Structures are given as C-alpha cells and as structure tokens.
Amino acid sequence: MSGSEPKFSSPLERETAAHENIRRTAVRYQPDFPTVPLRLGLYPVVDSVAWIERLLEAGVRTLQLRIKDQHDHHVEEDVRAAIALGQRYRARLFINDYWRLAIKHRAYGVHLGQEDLAETDLNAIREAGLRLGVSTHDDMEIDRALSVRPSYIALGHVFPTQTKQMPSAPQGLKQLAAHMQRLQGYPTVAIGGISIARVPAVLETGVGSVAVVSAITHAADWRSATQQLLALAGVGDE
Image (cartoon, rainbow, N blue to C red; front, top):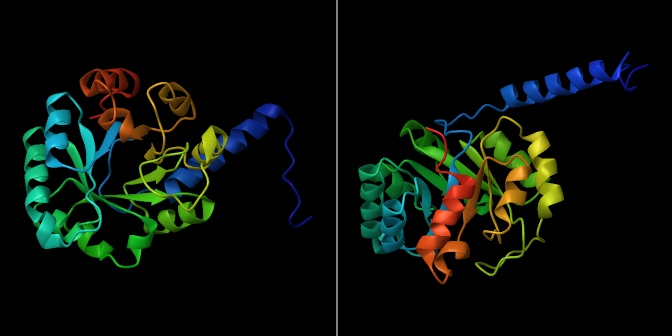
C-alpha cells in the first residue's frame, strides 16, 4: 500500500537498507564548495592575530579568526596577517564573516552564521576557491545549510556557553548524535561549551571535529590545555 513501511525479511536486510539510505544521503549532499577533510581535528576559534600565531606555533592546524562587528577597513590588517600566518604554517585558517577580505587575501576558507547567508555572495566565495563553513543550531538550519552545500557544517551549541549570547537552547549530546546520524559522511564540527573533559563524549557522537574557545583562551595554562585537546581531537586529516 502506498506510504506503508517497507517490509524486510530479516534484521540484516533492514540494517543493509538503512546503511544504503545513509550512503545515498551522503552522496546527495556532497559539498558544492572546495572540500575539507572529514576530520578537521581541534578547531580553536579566537579573536586576535596573537592567538592565531600562538596556536599555530603550538601545533594547531585548523582554526578560525572571529572578530565581531567591525567594518572591513578596521580589521583588514588583522585578517591579512592571520591569513599570511596560516599560509606559512600550511594551516586551515577560516575567516569568520569578512568574506570579501578572505577572498582578497586568499584565505583557506570562510565561516558564516545563518544570518550571514542571505547577505553574502556565495558564488564569489566558491569561484575564488575558498572553503565554506556554516553554523547551525537545529534541524531547520541544517536544512538551510545543506541547501548551500558548504564544505562543512558546524553543529551547536552543544553545551551552555558564556562566549556569546545564544537565542537557542543547548542541543546536548543526544541531539548532536541524532544530527550525526543524518550527516554521516559530511564534514562536521561541534561547538559550544566544550571543555577538555567533554571532548571524548562529543567525539563519541561521530562528529568529525571539535571547536573550542574558552577551553583554551580562558585556561590557566593555555599551552597545556592546547596539548591536551590536540591529544584528544588530533590535528585533522591531511
């Protein structure tokens, strides 16, 4: 009967069908932007060139410069300097929001929030060969991100966070795991309130990468914190 559940002769047949559905979903949603590794590893998000340089020297190879709510001409020198450092260390440096400057100075990639998608020339980012990451906070925003087919999708906020004001509730590990069932095979990043102690449980959901802010920048010993996080999350795949 139309709309009825498919019939399976055995649990193995049901499991095989489920895996095939996951495979088809992954193929359907291949990124339309330049690709990134499935696992980006530890992904610090920081607000200064000084932090970018420290973390690159410490061995981090995926990171983001996030300077909020400034005019392009006020941040261009910082963006240029950060991109130059990323290139020197052969790192995956994403610029948050300032996509025109990222294109101009040839960044590895750009990260955008949901509110930025409608105001950004996505074709210009794609044609310049930059990778694109997009923030999401629920299933509807994941749908919107998938329609853009970015290089990776950020899933947050997982836990309560003091880093920025969030209009949505924390998703928690259970919801993160549910998102990962849907997004298997797509590069993903978990973000929001992730401490060193929480990283193993976050990674158990299957998410490919872990973004942190205060776990490093507010640590009593940021070098030690960074090394502990690298040991847990890695530097990412080549």
